[in-house]
Length: 523
Image (cartoon, rainbow, N blue to C red; front, side, top):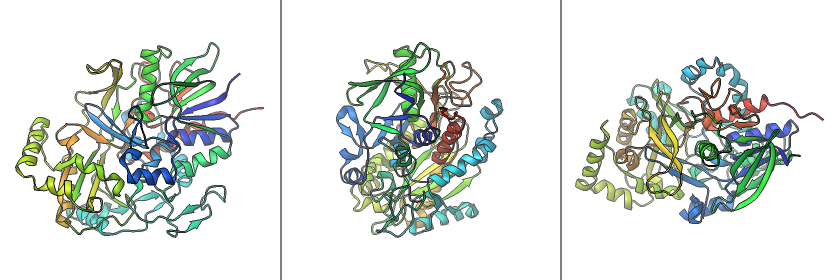
């Protein structure tokens, strides 16, 4: 009767872990992924040419890096078989204590700290997590920054999902008793964020997805889920289309659907089926009401000419400037050089309009920094980026409306008064200035934050809140959508609170928890 027992939409951390574990339980699984398969050759092309890196299918760009721009937030991520793991910095940190103490979890009587513990361990093992073994110039600057801020004891090497074997040599599978692919040791090229062409970073296509396909999971690249229709008795009819033009590719009858398309993809799909197609009208009206940015800011420092801080993995060390804040440094390679155009003077002011004006005046009246930034040789070797995250309770909305410039409805951001996501984190600017002093560099803000008054994040979360029923949540604590048996949400949109650190480990562990609670196939 059914083509598959489970159709998983998206192949990121939530979808990949779910696929493998459900296949191990005997179920017939397919994964629909709107992007392509991405391998070493595609990654090399992406590092050389922006058009090969960027994902904007309606403009003919079918790379693997995507940037979603809303009025109040800019969101970056990955597209392709492996999802965000293709472009992720490979940092695998457990949630901060405050995450487990969030009011949402208390309301649900959910002891997630106890429940997640074994799954965090499993996810760490599957993704080959180990402490980064190398510290170089940029790490020393970060350590000095932590010392200057009086929190030297919080500075540490981060746990990375990277294989740190001998560089330049092929090694038999080091993780899965020979069942996984051969690997090559990290070359410390700073290129994690534009993909790893040597298969040193433990992207999902080298572990969960690789093993899932060996279990019989079928991956459908360049197939985007569109319409989801409940069948009369049980199951769903799912229409799959081309991402570039909406051309229908096939329809599948499936017993269960797992939405793992990332926050933007999952919310868009649920809103479209709730409000446009009206095939899922019972989806809770809490959909998209609380979307979190991990309370994040991304700042930068341009070091003096001749400085080279690129020796290392993208993220190798971190520290905690205060009890609510986590900061990592980021290295980049030439493939990320395009972001120089997004950065300008560092300006501190909590009033968005005043900050924007100060930034514009600083840019015009003191153009030296902009000229250095725009025309610096070997820019990627001279720039340090900082991702600064907090576990504070702030959020925005993503709703489904028709903007004045569009003929159709689409996701639109709105602020949540009293809980606005920050476009300005004073502590982020403070640590950036202190870091710049260590090298004699120039501290910078992103224009989207300083002029656009937008949050920027690589770690968007929530949007499908857990609740006891449709009145207070989209999904139950087992990830099933209220009112729709067999329809699940398992990705960052199901995370109930700001984690305060890089969320990939938590999302993977939540997927492990979800799959562990699904039944074995009988017969």
